Image (cartoon, rainbow, N blue to C red; front, side):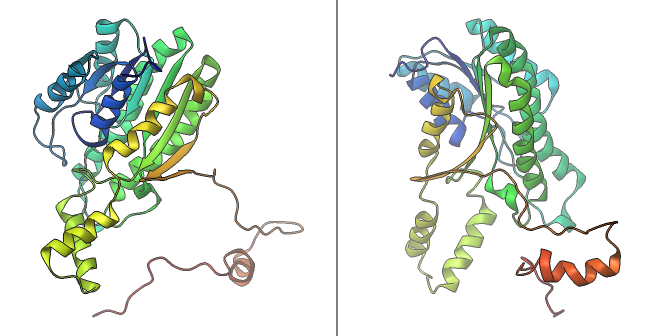
Length: 313
């Protein structure tokens, strides 16, 4: 075990499997004491089980570390408070929070139910808020803290994931503002967009989609299809964890309010949104006829519709 996070206490939500599990193990590997939160639900949010969180705690203890499980849901304010309370009661403090818990309810927008929408927004976006608010109270008092939020490239647009995209891109906006609110107290808040093969990313729908892609390329044998899928999703959860550990260290004290992408050996820092083009009037305000004439010529020239209308079959 390393000692870069000796005496620090970390909470990782959704830490029973996948990326959360890898993050918890990596933080423990650097000496942090862990609260392993996991409700033990299926990828769609159904069912519960204490086994995943308990198994990760046992793994950490076998490494020589300290860990306690927590089974609260991040989707409620009470759950978020109880998760942080577990850290305070078990270890006396909270230094690091990794908001990772998530579920999927993929549907095309016209088929998505209000329940599908609410479930995903509650777990991802509300969950990030609930846990961050509860943790920030203690971090502010001790004037030190590290919060790492989990976004997704799906936030940039993904078919059939309006709920997930909205939640994940909402987390990026939340990260920027939380960084401004908390930075003066020695707390940093950053986000990552990890790309790894997990139980959620490799859903049956995703596997079918990738199989179709393989078939279109002339790949039809089952072993060859699996090789194709493996070649596309080369990243594993353990490849994501070192970035999270780094953002939790003292060495990352000046990184605040930023978003990273990580996929295998590729690590990127996103730019912040900025204007691509602009047009100004010498006086007055824009009129409709003016916009119809000038926008295609000067403001959106070269822009391509990512989903153009198709002829009715």
